[in-house]
Length: 189
Image (cartoon, rainbow, N blue to C red; front, side, top):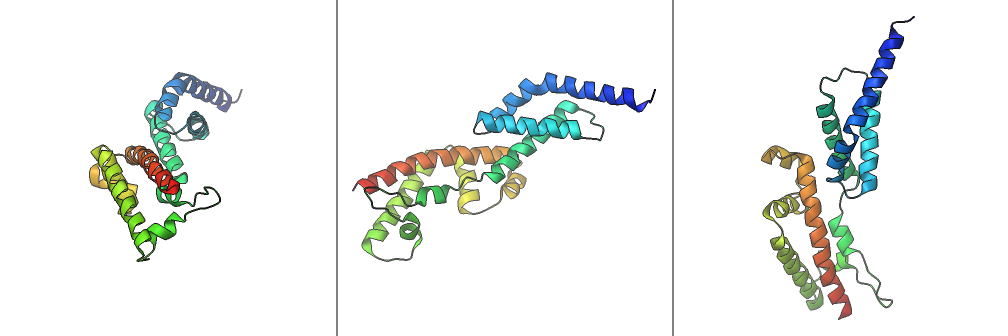
């Protein structure tokens, strides 16, 4: 009998046992950090696929799995970057009319209506930012407005990139909701 055969069987058994033992905990960990159950399932599957395909010796499987899961979550956020400004500034049809928010808010147009809309938008954005917890507000301003990458923010603060992304996500969800109200009010006038 070939000695490699029992080793392969033992390795497969170890992989299966680890997956059975870690599935629920790891899924819960991932699910807390992503938007949907489907995303969590996809990431979990990717983590276990990488685990099963790994040819190097893993000393602490649990720590390794959590590290890979964090990396996959971060990768997922990078793929689905939250385009707040684009979402908010899209033209919205209402009774056949639409306002090109990007044109109004980002133009150098000096007419009174554009200036009024810009001032209302920035006031509302500031008020909405002030409602956020300090950590969420800070990461949103640093990343979205100051355009500082998450990796640089993580180095500056000692926080993980995933934590910073999560904070920004909560900020974006709040700001979207608050600024959507303003958008609806302006469209009704």
